[in-house]
Image 1 (cartoon, rainbow, N blue to C red):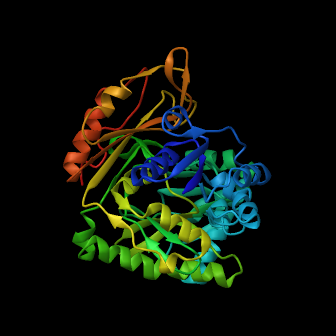
Image 2 (image 1 turned 120 degrees about the horizontal axis):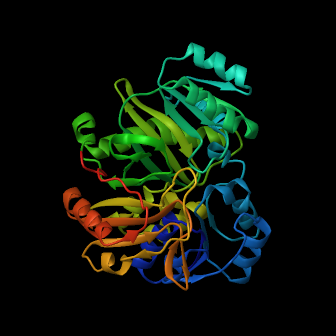
Length: 419
């Protein structure tokens, strides 16, 4: 299969790595990064331009386009590809609003009867202050639109909550939400608008520092599977089944009923509260860094499933084959992240890390120059360890990370420790 993967992060590197592991595919990435370039052809195309992406996909006779980030989806890239007859894995512009607008997502949840937290929408700072007066800390505020994983704050500090609102209000409304206590779980669901195929659950770590200290980030690590789910639900599969029936299927039906059918990947951001599973957010694409630990556990069938979701035949597609394994990823970030990351610094030790059994280094923000590999953004690398158990996978991930040097680099030491 000729596959075009859009994006430049570790999520896209993970998708490409999983497709290459299946064998038999010819893959091109746009624009890719320094790590992806070492494995497949990369091209420079404006991936937020529906016209340019479609022209390139048609000229290249691609069998499938996999859209990684949210921005091309919200820009309508999938719409243009479908119109040109090119199968695209990712929802239409209208359906991608489930991620592009938090208030739209809340409306969908209300129509679908999906359990979630109570929220208030504010469009001015005075409205934010009124909502905060009625709320009990910790305060949860979310920018309504896309914010590259930085639009959410959870804080006990009233002044910090107001400052967050002031920062994002110029771009649109702010949602002030009920704080939901409990462990978070991410569950990806493939869908063609009718059929639903869940992947394995994962848990990510949003805070910068150990023990969930520091500011929110795009994600500092993740692991899969989640053995602790068995204590609450009897088995991990029972949890997945419950989410599919109470969250995924009702949401997909509500989207179809509203004239905005959703086909692609529905990312269910969940929290396991004392009163049951509730939705924190929906995304319209693979999550990062959870993708980096979910996809290595798939042995075969990924490309066929993505194509079936794109062309409406997921219900008759062959089931995915899973490995009986575990995966842990640890993110290496630049100094200054998530605020103003220091870029341009040299990275060494990647080859040494990948020489370790069960270790794979996925590139998130890297470039290649005269000095060698350099950091070009905030989250730079994902060191992924796989093994028969979570303990083995975690040990390998951290052993791999120990070989990599980046001046001022930041990483957590507690990813998957409790699990």
